[in-house]
Image 1 (tube, rainbow, N blue to C red):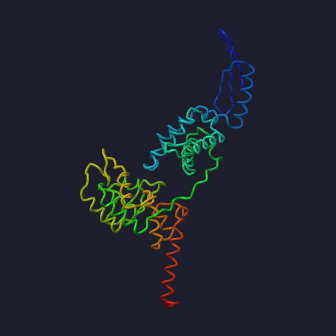
Image 2 (spheres, rainbow, N blue to C red; image 1 turned 30 degrees about the horizontal axis):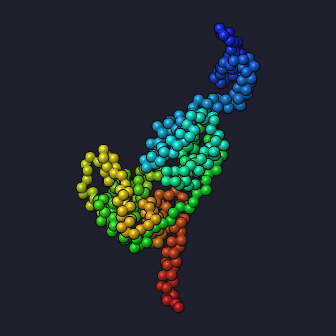
Image 3 (cartoon, rainbow, N blue to C red; image 1 turned 90 degrees about the horizontal axis):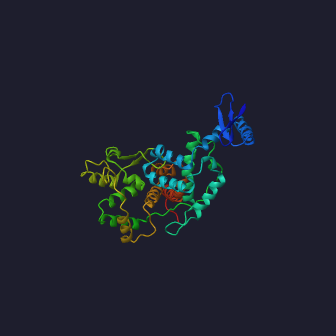
Length: 355
């Protein structure tokens, strides 16, 4: 039941509304006129009865900047360390764009408007964001709102649930030919950077990501059991990578001289890991006469070699750390080529050569 009490001041009279309903906190508000007080009381009583008033009241207390700041403070460390810079950059874009708005003001229509802004905003290199990049920005804020709904109770519903994703282009499938691989490794071996050859060998032989290689510590490496254990992966799951052949040999040699004050395989300053030698990598590519090849493409090269040497799609997914087969489906034709070769050998053994 709502009660409205006039409050007489020196200059004007205001009206204080007090609403008490069993099982709910008392709600009060002071308004400038009796008619406004009565209107607000009716509306608020209805919202309390429908169970939406207190949810809405909470979302009106907090801004987008507040929810992002809390997420960065409490949730960012739960992600893979390699994701921190990008996630922070994405959320800072949202803070700059809609940070002052209260959560109650964030609607699907508003988010669609800013999705279009992400698509049409020209970057420093005069390019535009791809559909997949736009989706990553949207997913970053959606993750924040998801926590705000489920755990903090700052929002009743995540407005991203009603927004479609942008169409994404098919992923790159660039991988090295045998000649390109040999030329690149020779160029890396001759590099002025002492780490580049080992970094490239690890990438091509294990399919590890750049961040996984650069943040690698000696405690993750088990030479006896021929494996590397990755604890902070992109999908958040522990992954074990086989360490064999040339990669194991060179890594073992590399470990004979270690920095006792730094646990990283590639140590940087102040107990951190070294940065990826981007300049040396680009120089090696240029000297090897290899174009249109990114370091991330070493994962494609590793996967393609696995496929051509008989690995199933499930096995390739396990090595690369993919949860589903969708990401490795691009190597299916290479596995099929290997299967054809195996069947041909079997038929030759049974029936002999035929013209």
